[in-house]
Length: 264
Image 1 (cartoon, rainbow, N blue to C red):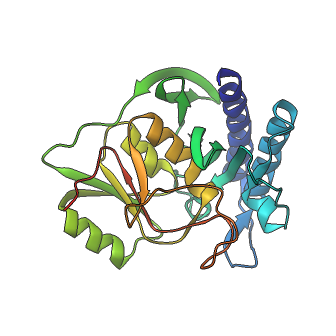
Image 2 (image 1 turned 60 degrees about the vertical axis):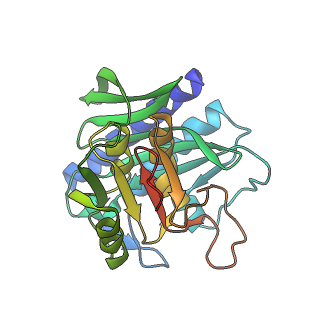
């Protein structure tokens, strides 16, 4: 998997440079059919990532957010596939907050087995590696140093991370129910990464997400010793098509855990 991880890193860093150029020089916003915002940064970053993946892995299909919005959806039946969100946290990006990310993941048999989450404005990336996960410090677009990360054991104080832009009453109720003592509001897939590096315990998400929003961060969390499950405690899987209750690749409510959840 080392070669794939290098491709992921190279693609994410180049996409991050394109995103930051637009971030620093002016952001024009348009809206897709579902009224979600999109910018030139989303489109340029996706084109860069797709080019890297096509060169290195031409036989692996890619499900990418902007391509899907344009009607480009390859067949993934029975196949490993990539999930790409070129700019997760577009609202954070538009509002000039720093917690937006580039997300690239590989899914096999419904499980995200490799991934990278890169936050170019923060100069930090998280990725899966052989046998675990690591955090990268990125300076001027170049990796300056790395450190292995691991989820922390459950302690007496339970810390939650939740969406800055998409919190909900269900989230608040869940946190009360499990006895959350501390709460941090963060945008994008960085929430998974905070669990993976051992600074938080649980990430509840009851609002709607898509698979490309979650796969890379979920891969990092699982590699660091955590788990993600549906809110009803069933397995949280990828490659969901022909769903009765939602569109292709839409996620149900889920909970990310840095350790095994307590069962009542």
